[in-house]
Each structure stands twice: as C-alpha cells, then as structure tokens.
Length: 237
Image 1 (cartoon, rainbow, N blue to C red):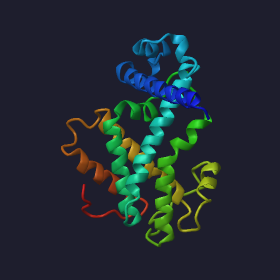
Image 2: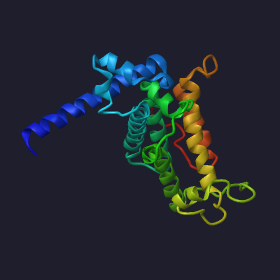
Image 3: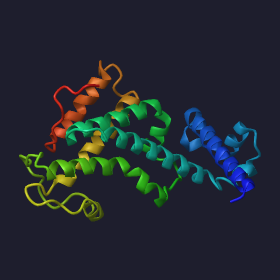
Image 4: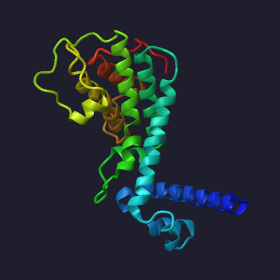
C-alpha cells in the first residue's frame, strides 16, 4: 500500500465520519423520516454528488447510522456485563449501560427503537448489530440456567411454543421441562429493558416517577424475577 493510497483512505474515512455526524445532527433537528442527503451535503458545504460516492441513497446512510447505533449500544452493554459477578448482577449492569447510552444519545436510540422510518426496509446487514444486546442477555440467562440459579416457573406458559422456530434454533432449542418456556420468558427481559427506557426517554413517565434511576432498577428487578433471575437486593449505582 502506497502513501497516497493510505492518505486517500484516511481522507475517505474522515469524510465518512463527518457525513454521519451531520446526519445525526439532522436526526435531532428533523427526525429520521426527513433525513436528506442534500441537507447533509449543504451542512458540510459539499455538492450533493460528492455524498453519493459515499452513500448512494438516503437508505444507505440510514443503514450506516442504524448499524453504528446498534453496535454502540451492544458495546456499552457488553463492556458493562464483563465485570465479575453472578449473571443477575451482570445483567443489571448491562441494562444500566443501555439506559445510560440511550439518555446520552436519545435521537440515535429513537432511530433504532422508535417508530419505523416510512419507506425504509432494513437490510440483513443490520441483523447482527441489532441482536447484540439480546444475545448478551440470552447468554446470561443460559449461564444462570446452566449454573442452577434459575428456579422453575411456578406457572409454565400453556400451549405450544410462542416464538418462531428460528428464534428457538438460535437459542439452541427449547430447554427441557420444566424450563421449556424459558426462551419466551427471556424475551420479556429485552422488552422490559427497551420499553422502560423508551417510556422515560419519550416523556411518558413525566410526573409519574420521582426517581428514574431507582425506578429503572426496580423495573429490571421485577422483569428478572419473572424468569427467576436473581438481582442484588440493593445494587450500587
């Protein structure tokens, strides 16, 4: 690789970063549905044609922002869960990290967990980044189950499995009784995490909750208890 090739690559990487930053600012100002390559180019003082060499369409730019957001959320959760401790302690640490990331990046969180962008179809490139947090949470549940830390449910879910077969396959199949519904129960952990953060972030808990961090911990504890995952009684913030 020549010096000129390296310089071009660095320049391309720097402009790609600048385009994403300008697009993120536009998300905050106008929302994802109004994201425009022309507006991003204008913000950067570039011709629109210059941006098409980096992102051929608005959807391509949206996809890049979505992948970046999911990877950032996943990295925050994984780093937090890497601490020592039992699965419940690490699970709560990961949940707190996701909440902190969302509070610091509300518009990026809304992009990936808010209302779908009209006309946008996410490509398969987004699947792996989008499932980083769910894979982490599932791994902690599997670890707790394998370690004998999960009591069996007092009232198993009736009927056939409620999740798609591909989800069961990715989880290694349904566990044996009395834990056959563990995948469905574990799904509620992810829903509780994203739902609780969304309610706080989008103002649905205004004048309802007096202490948001404490309520978040309480909500995560209640969700964990639904599958038998034990969290510390008074975990440090």
